[in-house]
View 1 (cartoon, rainbow, N blue to C red):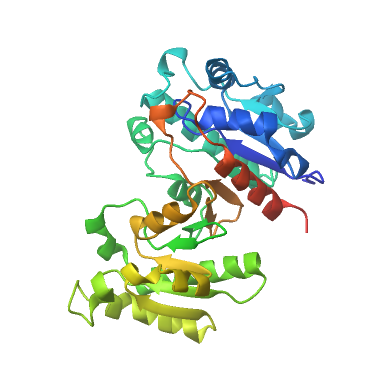
View 2: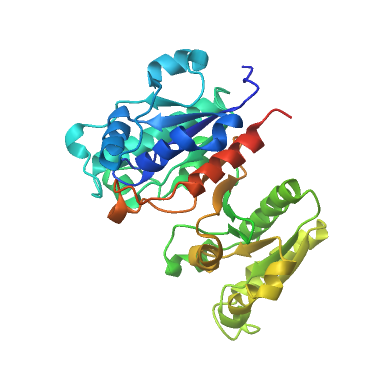
Length: 336
């Protein structure tokens, strides 16, 4: 299928009970992304219109049913909503976790992946989902990264958060701390290093400089702390990566890896677990970071924040992260 000159980007609305609907409304009404792409919000008309009425934002101007759009992706011109009708009215209570909103959010994601694999859209940008709502709906995945990897049958994939200030990739993501050591392997760490190096080469236009964090305090202190994860997994993976020509520093203790001097010298960090990278990244770039999944056969970017149920549908949410995610998806998905 031939895509238009401006790539179509599917934007999943996220959990309807969170801030996803209102940041999508901002994107449709005011976002500069329409000059780069055709933004298509995959969601529910009822949620967007109710959120618009609650916040005083403009209602969507162009809405088309999923079945209609799927049959003819050229049926829309400019920013539009692809309506799934996946929500029961009783399930939609702003700020409350519900299986119905988790089920709807998952439906938008499934359809966006389907459209990207079919070549109907050039890229996907995802709004925030609620893991408890997904679980209540019986969805067997803890987050976007795992959903995309499974539905695209990616042989390997990892989460990377990037911003002008700092970039982090993750060996493990949505698991408890006690589970992290058992998920480390030379192969997994090497995969994340390789995918990150390739992504940063594309973004920077030069050979990137990567820093690998240790798992344990003091990066294990030569086996004194932890179960020898640095010696068994991290260092051997780094040796293999260096043999491939990848520029690496580490493994370094995480408490010094993010110092200002290191930040200036580092294009991307390889982090062993979720908060190891999320804490410094959100301190430095909460409103400007973008989440992307590496290793997929399709382009996927995302906001780097959650559903913010406590402020949902109050007009307080910032749409900057979503706009940046869509712009990055559009640039990556643009014709060469």
